[in-house]
Amino acid sequence: MKETLYKYLATSSENVTVFNILEVMVISLILSMVIFLTYKITFSGVMYNRKFNISLVMLTLVTTMVMFVIGSDIALSLGMVGALSIVRFRTAIKDPRDTAYIFWSIAVGLSVGTGNYLVSSIGSVFLLGVLSIFSFSGIGKEDRYILIIRGNRDKEEEIMRCVFNSFKGSKLRAKNSIGNSMEIIYQIKIKNNEDKNIISNLYSIDGVNAVNIVAQNGETIG
Figure 1 (tube, rainbow, N blue to C red):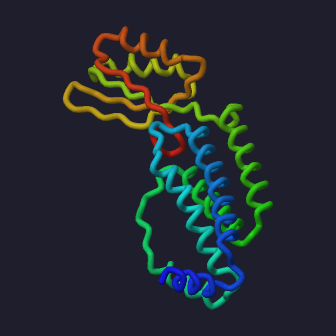
Figure 2 (spheres, rainbow, N blue to C red; figure 1 turned 30 degrees about the vertical axis):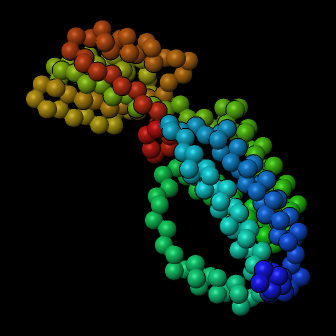
Figure 3 (tube, rainbow, N blue to C red; figure 1 turned 135 degrees about the horizontal axis):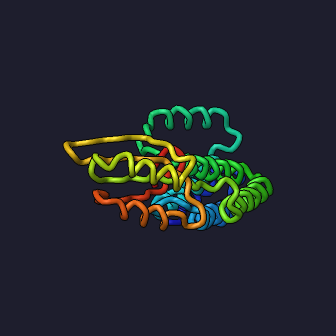
């Protein structure tokens, strides 16, 4: 029974051996681990999502397997496109960098699945180098923060003067007040640990109850 099943599986795929399948999947796994480590090393957000990183590895392997099955069969490729069009992905991608990593995983899967090992290898190493340069050299590094101040409303002018003297390029983003309480939100740029001075100066003002500084990456906080 087992021999019959094996012969059926072996003969159902033309010019495909177990070694070919393992070769493609192992290469795909190695390159997907490059993506995994790159994402982990260069991550600069607030909370690292290990599940998303593992899904990048799985996405690379699944894409490789799909492309290996399709090969040059036009009819099969059209059927696969029709089947995938039924699927609806509703997971929100909050960080644009995550979208880039998803496309990287798909590109590696497409390249390895079609036998373009050199393209996928050199391309992955090149992307690894570019992302490492941007991450560790400080090029394009975000230094924008959100400054949130809560205190008494009668101290508004004094608080705003203190922020303006500490950060010339500060921008007022929001101002909320309830009774005598007030909340002011600024967008500021911090360099060389300037946050220590602004926190001390703000707390020296009578009526300031809380001061929060939150990192801002792009259009999101965190």
